[in-house]
Amino acid sequence: MSSAISPRSSSAPSPLALYVHWPFCVSKCPYCDFNSHVRESVDQAAWAKALLADLAHEAEALPGRQLTSIFFGGGTPSLMPPSTVAAILDAAERHWGFAEDIEITLEANPSSVEAARFADLAAAGVNRASLGVQALDDQALHFLGRAHGVDEALRALETAQGLFGRVSFDLIYARPGQPLPDWEAELTRAIGYGTEHLSLYQLTIEPGTRFHTEAAAGRLVIPDGDAAADLFETTRNLTAAAGLPAYETSNHARPGAESRHNLTYWRYGDYAGIGPGAHGRREGVATVRRKKPENWMTAVDRNGHGIEQEESLPPVTRATEALVMGLRLTEGVDLSRVTVLAEGRPMVDEDAATRMAAQGLIRRDGDRLIVTDAGALLLDAILRDLVV
Image 1 (tube, helix red, strand yellow):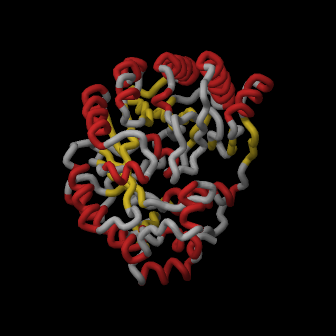
Image 2: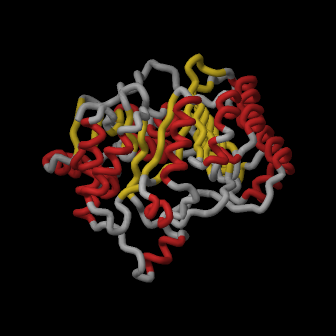
């Protein structure tokens, strides 16, 4: 498959992205291992003040840059007061300045309560919404612990499409007992709603989740390797035929509608991360914020930022991260850049690469190394064998 996106030119300026983490949810979904927390109440004024302080610290560490994307993730950032979103965007623009075509994404639950805030969020400056629909089947939504139903989600989607310039939504497939024809019908229906972007994730069992406990007890079984592979292949074929080809392992978009923010991660660009548990990569320095909301808040009050760890990454670590992230993309990764990051150290096992190429799992295109469609579902195994 040809790439849905053009690789970034080595002469183009490196983009700066900003990630803002809002850690609160109404309830914890049984599959979710993200840094999300349920609290009876949130001091909104205190949280806005702390996020602005954390933001100012990152701006001081990264002067003279221009933001190309901002992503509000969580948790459930659509629970944030629109005034807080507006304040963060105003401060970010003052600190860094915005690219003319900046992408500003906010994740949202497709509930009627949160959809009522969409107009105010759009007025605050959000121009791209990512909706956690997760399924187009009420029984499946109940299984996944979602509070919304299909009809409510579709009304929220319609509202979002009328207010935001760009809209994406998520679906989770490879659910227990999900037949291939059912997923084909569900995905075909999803494509029919006309969004420019879909994030389609196979259900995985993550440690520390309720689903992990259920699976360990034998009460939850997800599709096996062959069934999962069939579902994955069908997903890629249907989206490609509809003009939304995969550009990353789980993400599909019309050409030009890819998530610019996430491309910064996968292309190993600089990004600042603020809020509880947020990670950042800025000019070779890795940052990690304190994870528990109360601990993060205490750290910001004490230090002016919520950083728990801050370290300069060695060249080999940076090169490994760039290689692992880049191979998720259908455009692949520029090995010449990886070599520069590694200061000349070989990062690819050439014997393994030759073997995998003969098996049709990877291919070379000049300096670029690309995982094929056949290799995409085996990406974890490929990385284990390929990366030195």
